[in-house]
Image (cartoon, rainbow, N blue to C red; front, top):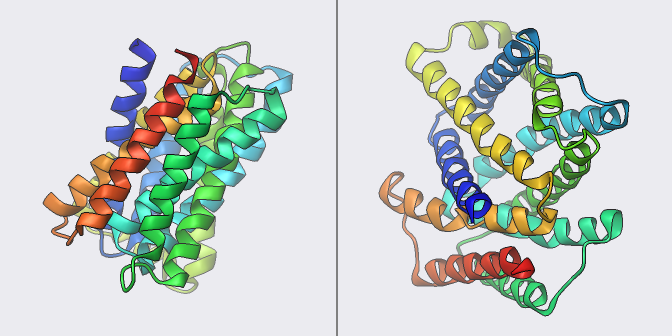
Length: 282
């Protein structure tokens, strides 16, 4: 019960920092500032004596760090061309299906009837979101689905990594998050001339908002990594994706986006499916 409640709390945090990112004018710049805040926290933890990773965990740490950089870029791309209330649920709703498959292939997690029911509901909700005429373009759906696939990839890698760290999240998480420093050269190369000026001359309010988002992100995903050291990866990922309901609420109330009844229904179906997946071990 404690694990489930903490993962639900992480879901709320995750939807919140994504809303902060979507609400910024320059999302790539904001993501870079978020990444610097995350990397700074990780580096501080390492300097203060975070346990060294086991040799078996290092491949996962390196792979996950690089995958997270790809994820950051995909997320910016997804939010640039799609509304938060539609891009977020598609991206987050896709990942539990792929994580479940990845966990089956890598650590042979079993698939129960309850998990099958959850998969069907999550898939159905995604389809409803994706086919709403005039709401989700092919380009925005592709961006969100790609983001979901990357989420699933790093989730499986991190699930393996924390288990190969002898169940010690602090011997894994800070070292992986330190790779977020790589977002700085990615930003500089992508933006070209004037990028350093943009990065250093960002307004205090926008930089502060981005850094707060980074802090929330560390806490949210840190909880998830901690939960995956023993709980099934697919279940943890699925329960985390109940954040789609929080995301739609934030989009409607905070970002003033219009949300159709079909979108509400689809997100609720995704959330119920995710809960079924989380309850598979009950």
